[in-house]
Image (spheres, rainbow, N blue to C red):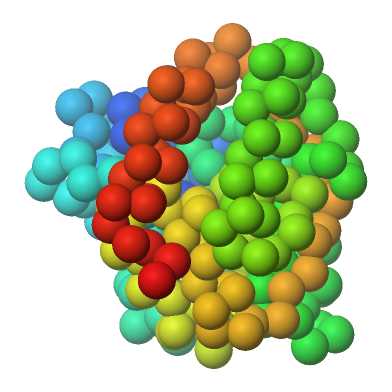
Length: 227
């Protein structure tokens, strides 16, 4: 129905998402059957629910962080012959029906498609979260030189060539800025694609806190990510 090639893979990092991950994977597989779920040291039934929903599951023995989970999933999808890789959050915020638009946007020669809620739409987004994300865009611009409207959106698509060049070294949430930095450093062509993000009580409870964002920035600077 979506017209996607069979070689498109969706990579989903997950930590303790047993209550929602099955439904998320079922919805994604209606659009793209190739789903790789990276179980990042969950203590619940995330891996089991993901397998039952039809995903290929890789498990980290301990929690390594979202960046490490994404790198594991991307590497695995490439080994399986992926021509394109989509990253997708496990908490139900993203709309799987928008995956084809991300892939199709790469047909014009872009290497990376970055989802943006600020050129698309948000549902039930708290003002504090909106402000935090706007600040994150400014910080990313200051650090990377790329002026993006939404720099911390987990819904992205990569061509195989671009995915092969990514090397995520930031294990935790700082990977979002690291991806943008690598796009800039490698001079990858990118395009922003409008998407919809739906906020729920569950996704907000799992989401990024302001204090954690400060820790991420300090971590990036101390480790010399952008040198």
